[in-house]
Image (cartoon, rainbow, N blue to C red; front, top):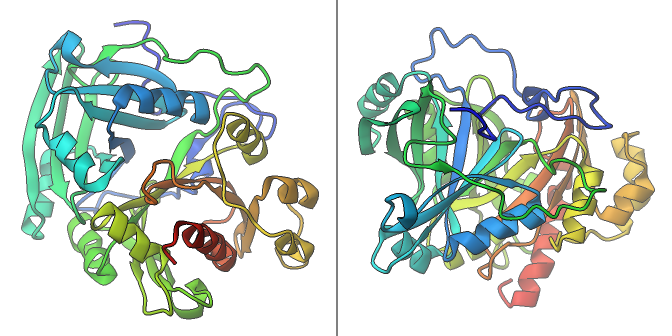
Length: 401
């Protein structure tokens, strides 16, 4: 039972920005919370599961371009006859990449409908049965009933709830398990070990939030309130989140400890097709639009990711001409922000630095955000106009604006 590369919550990293061990709770803006009266307490995001057309190639891409490390695997060689799966980690963040190895699986059917995308946002909970009982009583659809999976390393109890579109939340209790990921997986060697020496050890250390695009926002906000006991953090409507051509509305729901945060977007009436409309069309319905990855050093991370081929959205130089007037001082000089096209936002609690990738697959659907928080608990409200205008420029190139 020794020698495994990852156990959730145990990773210690060092960086020139935050000396010593990185506290991932601080990176993602978690807060102190008494869950003794919470009917659906959560410990945090357990992992994010992607369905993809080629799992090995996707795992290699996330290894090379995102600096992640493959730590576990299952496939035909160890009893998984239908799918191959690679588990990658970066700090506390964990991606599970799933692809079919023969035609006719539900994974292949999902990829045919949606392209590569997020199938499951798995949540670690202290008591799967209690969480499911509460969710069922609140009207949730249980797609996988509570059950145990075991191997030589212990037992994991899990279940799964249906949410928007075909997205699910697997509920995981791994408190009795010491293996590399889940029963049925074996420890695996990295697919890529050639990270340049000048790159940071990890490009990100946790998942900050996961954004869902839906057709009826309030329906799903109410779902998270009723079923999972989440509360509203932020709400963005009207001029907050509109450009000359397109608009959307967004509300952010979060667990009591803010370790799990889900902004929920819907399109609003506008002159042209919004980014949400484009996503819903090309994904074939509601789904996860983007994942925000928390980093302790966004400058080092973005430099490394650009070097490895990741494409980020562009920001006009004019954004930076008056940035210091309203954003104030940050740890990164404005000229470096301008060079790397990193955005800044400030609120009453502090500031954050953020940047967004272009879509990572041929369909204009899933993309990523890199975020570095310095006290701010927000989501970059001051950058919405600049961000959406950048997305619209890409939409126009695709002929979808």
